Image (tube, rainbow, N blue to C red; front, side, top):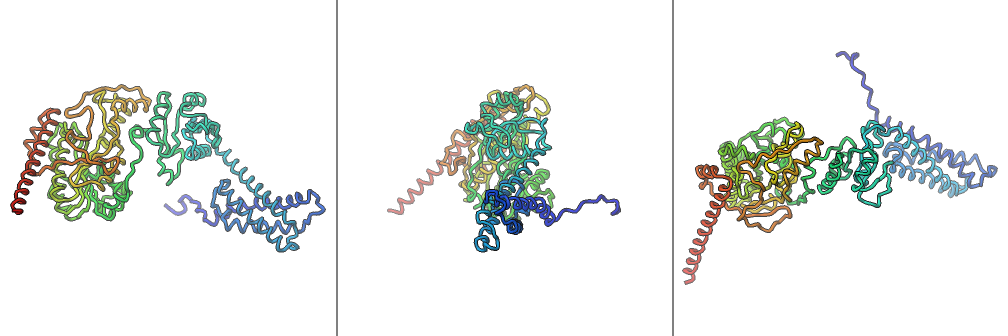
Length: 637
């Protein structure tokens, strides 16, 4: 394309041009304010007796005041665009500049009375009048701008819940957005002292209890929770009040987002079921976490999965010297790299494409990269699939974990954190059995090597790939019935970030060979979740019960019946010792026999095996103690 054919693009205005425009827009009115204030102050001083006014001197003082206003105003950036015109910050700077001008003229009048030639009270009166005139001009300018930038009066009326700083800021954004499709019509706030408050022209009409009346009076069909990180309890209360009325609930971004990027009506999003199932922010000891991650080489298996990806994001915050992402899923690895580095080039040695079922390759990678800390998140996790293909659970969850452990030992890894599942407690499914065996293998090798090899156990994470909530959401979006296994089924839920933060914390406080169990809160009814999601969608869909699948529990558990909980070091993490399993005791035939049992028999058999192992350990220990005591007696004789 020829230069003459290209579309002309206007040059970007320089900083000096922008400042000049700001100066031209503001300073002439301020100069005029002094031109009016000083003569008016003289008239007030002499009680309107014009014959006593020295007009020659007043003209000179006006010129001096205008020059000083420009000097001080430029120095304090009043005329260089530091603050939004008409804002409180702009007014504060304006008062400072004008006061400096008045004080300077007053001091000069005190030092050179014949030269200045006006009474010393005149600069004081004139300063007050000048501030009044300048501030008034700016207020009228701001009022005129706001009047012409009102939201569309035909826009959808919305209610704001929360008449605090976030609500005030959001209302201001909406009331000055002429292109906005929504307009705030009322606030709701549970602080009854705000009953008659008006923010940005929007009144506080009552509390959340008054939602039905206020919605009917205003015609609003949307309620926006205008709070920074309101917490699950507040969101549950809002959802319970709004959903029966057919009112849509929206929420603002997190406080961290608002502090970093501000907030506007474009940042609002609909309330999601995850908001109602999640819990308040986790308190983690950052210094403990950083102590074993900062400056270390950290490797994550299963880095392309839901848990692995978020683990990498959280680990990256603590300054590892190197973060190695290992997975056999190249697409998952790319998604993780995008989250961490902002690109998915896949052209660095940060990403490693490998399968934990390949022992030789895995050991070679570990010995070459020498990780200090390993998070083992790679696993097969879909319960019904593993019921159909139990040998895959054996190959990946059992032998794959053993491969990771042995690679860690070969490379001298000091800390290994194995990601387990609540289904490993009193296991009834192939998934649970395989993860329980993995816990025991980690425990045995930790004891043998005297290194911090441990497991972390938790339940369902909200939003992980293939989990219940995305499945429900897909069914609802397609307008299909929502399938639930059993009307009484309950599950534990935790958000992915919360789970991963606690996993990192567990890695800091965990001891050799134990399993750390995350506090999952109270179990949640699956049927209630389904009904809430249907109600929030506004669709009229049915719930169909399919029955529990093979190996599936009605209610999940976090502890096995015979596990003894150790005093916790963190309020949301409990500890339990795990009986180690020597790899030479792994028996594929015994595994196949156990898989063939029904769910109840599997749990009983798992218990029997572990109890027999515990008895054998105690017997060996007693024999050792007896031998040690006899030897001791012989020495004494």
